[in-house]
Amino acid sequence: MSNAVITFENVEKNFGALKVLKGISGNIHRGEVIAIIGSSGCGKSTLLRCFNRLETINTGNLTVNGIDLSHPKLHRNVLRQLRTQVGMVFQQFNLFPHLTVLQNLTLAQRQVLGKTPSESTQLAKQYLDKVGLFDKAESYPEQLSGGQKQRVAIARSLCMNPQIMLFDEPTSALDPELVGEVLQVMQQLATEGMTMVVVTHEMQFAREVANRVFFMDSGIILEQGTPQQVIQNPKHERLRNFMSRLKM
Image (cartoon, rainbow, N blue to C red; front, top):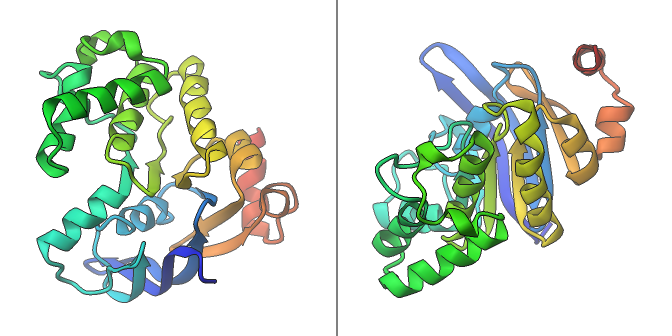
């Protein structure tokens, strides 16, 4: 389809002799929310990291927002363009501990986008307000809860005005009572039409927010479809076993 912003075909990724992605294909359309689920070690995070070139693919074709990522070497200007268009939020928050929240949000804006201090500060405060942390602008990361740190990390990515957001198990490092505040921000982004790819174990989020779900197993996408199809009416026994363990 013409509105596909991520297209991957026969993608393989190896770490030495270990084949992590085994010739997988698919596409993600503008405005879609894709939830990627599966057991640890199935290749979910590796696939996600290929989408912003944190990992290079060994074979196959991969295009993200019109940028061909299939080649082993890319010019640094192309990588810079990609990183401004594709935001990423990790399990760990990756905030600079010696910088305030505001400084964490303005640094990349100034260094990568060339924004002035006043421009970057104005945008940072706008997104801090969006994630409910306007009053934490002058705080340091160590003064925040895990949920607050992750919301800051989301705001930092949004400051780069990305067209696609990638989330690598963004709630897995959080205490259970803090998960909801992060998922609420992500749900708001989805409502606003942000293209999102989310590696997650949060089945309620996948069920309620995702347009499609990819179930990965042993380096392939074993099953994909709507949440109704994949989560509530799985076809493969492997997926049924996975879902039954989550419900225990």
